[in-house]
Image (tube, rainbow, N blue to C red):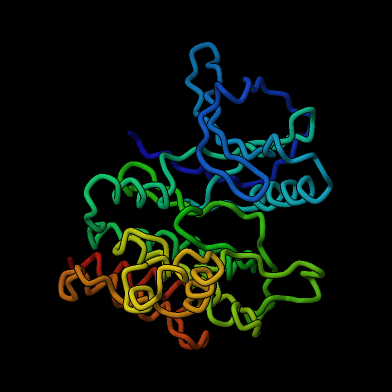
Length: 319
């Protein structure tokens, strides 16, 4: 499969909310992913005369969700943000419509990293090679640097499922900008500009300061990036490991109690998971170094996104 690059735009094009495209019924669309109230479907566009048209990924409301202003405004805000951005490691904007069918059209990529991790676990249980983990750190580090510095935005939901991969890690792209927050010049969430918006995220990937309710900065995106690198070694979501002394010591009645299990997992949120036992510290020196520094408990001790990318590039160059 050939690499699909986001084209560079030199000027901003207005969102055409009246653009109409033919969207077949859901059973004829391939679902790429889903989130709170939305599904991401693949649209194979009809070719034009003498022209091959690339597929799109459409973010649409789930059928079970009644259209409402909250979801409409959130999707439109994401569309407007995507349209303002142009970076090779950020998924490209394609279209937005508030017509009969509400959708955000985006560049379609091969697979999400989260899906790739699940597939690898199902197939062979072998961790990803160090160079592929470093490629994710390099590309997503660059994407976050662009977000944090040029756009002054916190992604707010960093995790493996929001990273898209093309052509066996030829390029990795960050996606899903529905819960971003504005950053001020110091890299802290700008509460005045954010208004009522709060950090959303996904708890298992959330940084310690998010869990404790402390000040949120751009470092809150770096922690989950570190956990994503860990995922590629462990082949499981962070804090989901169950074969440890804590669970082994629990009674069967407690294990059957969903609340008890959730409390155990919740207590792990915001902590650094142990290095998987099958990971060689010598072979995985680069990924482990980045994982460790990205998951420093104190936000000020975590590297900026540009340093994550530079460190990953250094390790790759010396492999």
